[in-house]
Image (tube, rainbow, N blue to C red):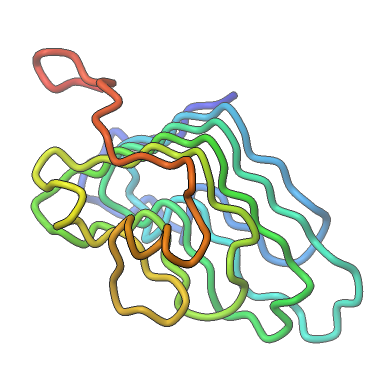
Length: 169
């Protein structure tokens, strides 16, 4: 795996995502660490060509996300049935004071196919307060809302204890 981060906190790193997937072949993103992002999203899966005829499978497995940007952004799809998105076994640690630091943002386009076995956490909020998902047309949703539509049957909102005593990643 790789490490994706910025040393220039608070400044844009240019571009729109640490990893940006548009058209093309299927992708497997696994065993990476994403921290202190300076992009508007960490992984963007967006903009499918309306003339594309082949399917695309994007699997995002076994990654660690730590920061404030949306960890997975899905949008601007006009043939959403041609893409499958699997979000499995990731650790998502949101930092910051907002109760809506987004884990998964699905404004338009492909609904994820699989969301399961992930760990989510923000040290400032409990699970019933934290609105970290924008799926299925909701403005904001809790983990319980996400579970109610069949996702995250084995997901948890729990501290993964990935920080040392000084708060360093």
